[in-house]
Structure formats: C-alpha cells, structure tokens
Image (cartoon, rainbow, N blue to C red; front, side):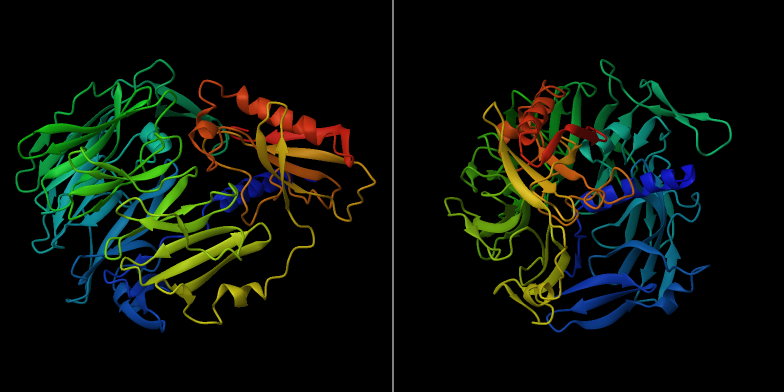
Length: 587
C-alpha cells in the first residue's frame, strides 16, 4: 500500500467512526401547531403537512436567487413567531468543533425580499442569530460582540463593545464548548426588551501552543487559551443588556466567578427572571439560582452534591404556566426526572425505579404525561416510555417490543405526529411517520414492518454477549467472528477500547462491529473483533456504574477490560497467543 493511500484510509476510517457513533436522527423543524414540518432542499424552504404529506413551497428558489450568487446552500433556518419572516443561515465556518459562524439573511415573505444581516460585518462572522419575540429585530454575535438589527429601520446597534479574542460576549471559549457543550451564549427576554448573555474573561488564561505540520511546508504554532491543571479557567458572568440603552446590568450571583462555572442559563417564561445552574470548580456541587433581573434579587432554590461529579443538565422544561419545571438528577442512584416548583420547595419524583432516563422526548401537559427514552432491561438499547406528569404513575413502554434495538422519536409539539427512527446492529437506520396518539404508521408502505421486509441481513452478524469478571462485574460486549467461522479452530482476537465517560462502544446500533483500525475487513481477514463496555462508560446502568471511575480513570476501566479479556482468552476458539488491543481518544 502506498503511504498516501494508507493515510487516506486511516483518515477515512476516523471519519466513519464519528459518523456511525453520532445520533443518526436529526431534529425536525415542526410548525407551531405540530401539523406540519419544514425542510430545506433544492435551494428552497418548504413545508410538509401531515398526515397526507402535502408539500408547499414557503421560500422559493426564485426569491433566494435574488441574493448575489444565490442563496442555495442553506445550513439552517428559523421562522419568526408570526411566520412572516425566515432567518436563513449559510456560508458556515467552523469554530472549534462546530460550524457556528457564517452569514445570515432574512426572507421577508410579506414583502417578497431577502435582506442580509450584518452587512457591515466581515463575511461569515455572524453567530447564533435569532429573531426577537415580536419578529421585528434580529440579534447576533460578531467577533465577540452582540448586535441587534432593527428590520424596519435597517439600523444596527452594538449592545456590547468590549469584545476581543479574550473578552468573549455571547459565545464561549474552548473549555465551555468542549466540556459543557456551550456555544450559543445569549437569550432574548420573553418581552423582547433585553438580552441575557454570558461574558467570559480569558485575559489571564495562558496559551497552549498547537503545532500545525500540514498546512504549510514549514510548521507553525496556533495559540489556544487553555487552562491546564492547577490553572484558573476563564472568569464567567451573566449580564442583562437593555435593547434601548445598550446598558448592561451584571447579575450578582453568589460565589467566585473564576472558581465556579455557569453552564446553563435561560429566561423563565413570561417573566423578568432567569434560572441558571452554577457548578463549583470540582463540579461536585450544583446550585440553581432564580434571579430577578429587575430587582436583582437572587434565590438559591436547589442545591445538589455528589461525592464524584455532577453533570450540567441538558435543559429544563417549564410546566404549569412557568410555575414548575422538569429537572434531571441521579441523586437517588438513577438518572430520573423531577417536577420542581419555581421556589424549589416542592419536588416530585416522576420516574421511580431502578432504571435510567436516557433523555426526555415530550412533555404532554394536555394529557398529563411525560415521554422519555430508557432501557431498563438492556443497556445497549433504547426505547420510548411514558409516565404520569403528576408523579406516582407506573412506567409504561410505548415502543413495540417486537423491534429490538435502538429507537428515537421526534414528536410534534402537540403530540399528534412523530418520526420514529429505528436501527440495530444488523438493520440500518430506517424511519416511519406515525400518528403518535394511536402509534400507527401514517402509511403501510412507509411502516417499519414493510421496510424491514426489504432489509437484507448481513452475512456476518454482530453477536452481543455478557462476561462476568473476577470482581463480579457483568460487562456487555459485542463480537464479530471471522467469515466461515469454524469453532474447532483458533483465531487471533483484536479488542477495540474507548472506556471513558463520553461515549459507549457497545450499543445495539448499525455500525457496531465496524473496523476503524484500518481500511479492511477484520472478519474477512480472519480476526475475531471484540469491544467491551467497562464501568465509567455512560451506559444506562445507574450512577454507581457511571461514576465509579471517579479518581480511578486509567485504573478501574483498564482493570475491567483486562479482567474481561482474561475470561475471553479462555474461550476455545480464541488464540491466546495472538491478541491485540487498540483504541483512540480515551481508548
């Protein structure tokens, strides 16, 4: 193999690894009433009305062609509250991991024209643009400052002016993005009169020099502000800027703003209050604060502690007209949903039992249910469940048990329709549109049952197994055996390892067992290929499973892998003298 082809094969394998470990389902842009969804294709934006799949053009290719060079590469879009305007994101560029800066245009459907936002700003420099609640303005970040553009007067106002590479307004530094998944750093108030935003001060953070050996015949360094162990992270604070005066009021949140993080913040519906989550530097104390942005009053409504760590909550959903919210916590040993009053005094456990909630799917206040993903009986899979929103209800499985594997649901806001996506280790991702109230497919032709009838099973299937180590720990694993496997023979074995808190490797999803080590086929080449899920991986097996790796990383996970391998090497068809282990990132 030529050296160039070898490196190409390695890079291709790495790209495929990320592609197949990512969630195959992308979010649907539902209409407000939940009877239709929007999509961008062929250089235009249209809607599809369910259940008959009636298609309608909303923003025509002809209208988008009025923009110089045409506006055809639509990365994302959003509608104003009244549906008369569409904010379109294009020409996107990468910031850290994601393409979060680019150009934005507003298509005004009532006037049949397209306007570029931030016309005086550098190309592809706008970030996180969003309509004001009344749809008359658009706010965005450019070069670490926040701006608001009035769509009627066509004026642009700077809401912050001190932004630099080290003073970051409305977005985040590398640490917040990588560790807390924070990117969009500002929120419109419900009344549209102000914006709450993060400001990070990285001026005292030292540079970590990365070496680029590939973009020039001479290597050069790339400085990245990065706090190493023992160094201080960026100082973080939350400001509320008045749209009319551009004056910022800084929230007086208790605690040092360097030794505490603020990974989550948003407005409480129909109020002048924000709810935010604060984590201490060790990330073992989580505090929820309600802050009145008018009076400055700050209330600590909820505090949780953990001997290991606490993850920042993904989001919270408000119910009961903003008087209560749905919170996620593993404080009782399992990841569960709680209904909490705005003052924190009333807390109701909604999902009781020895199982983990993987993610919320729908809050159905009208019928009194919360829908969520879980898999109490098999940590490699995922199914949809529901329980009473009032608490005390039984756990009800929504997904049909005949389809074993991994299920995702994108449910319309009113709970009428859903796109149901299914896959397992032998079935590539397939989707059906369904009437969510009856759980029936909208068409028999598009049903999972019909589509599965056309799926050809692979000749060499992934086998799932369990192995119990000498420590009494039961671990999940998958295995692909060589083609034309003969159990009387012995075969070399290759173990694929990740084994850290960011991802699972043993999941019943399409792509399990795929070879990312080299551009070849391990079973065809005569190898047994195996992956084991050790403790510390984010499998839905409870808090103790996930957090037992605390202060044991590189010790406990390696022991689990080694003890599992020791058992596997006793299998009669394994050649214990020909064993290899590989991994990347944590592996």
